Amino acid sequence: MMLGRAVQLLLACCALWAQAPDPAYAPLDRAYQALRASRYEEAVAAFLLAVELAPARAAIRKDLAYTYLKIGENEAAREQFAEAMRLDPQDHHVALEYAFLCYETGRRAVARRVFDRVRRSGDPVSRATAEQAFQNVDRPLAEAIARWQAALAKNPQDFGSHLELARLAEERDELELAAEHYEKAWRLR
Image (cartoon, rainbow, N blue to C red):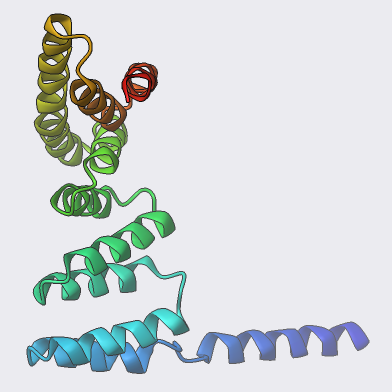
């Protein structure tokens, strides 16, 4: 008899929980209404409230990021895509959006790493996009490194050339080469 009441109580609690409203529903509804009316600042505020109420939902972060893009807030969008990517690492579309924004906002090394990850593990379409983007970032870095190495072969005592080569090598994740030339630049100071 006692077990029967416990089961009934558990079922009643589950039914109540299942009927509990989505805490982010109201702000999301306001955000989408504001988007439809092109009131982007209002949409951002509503999305931010929804993020507070449901911080583990990557889709909210993604929609907030796209809204930031509509108002030209690329760095804020980049950070929201980063958070969405952290919450849902298998969303390769979000990873690509994040990588492109990293590139556009001067974080080429991060962009290169994310493109590299997606080109190795994404779905076929994402892999193809990431491969092309990776090459577009990596090829100029490799070429610039080769040019600075040639310049240093002609003038090994050039502080600026060592520093630039080190910076480019670091950006390309050639850390041993970067360390070598940072040290050489430091010694020439």
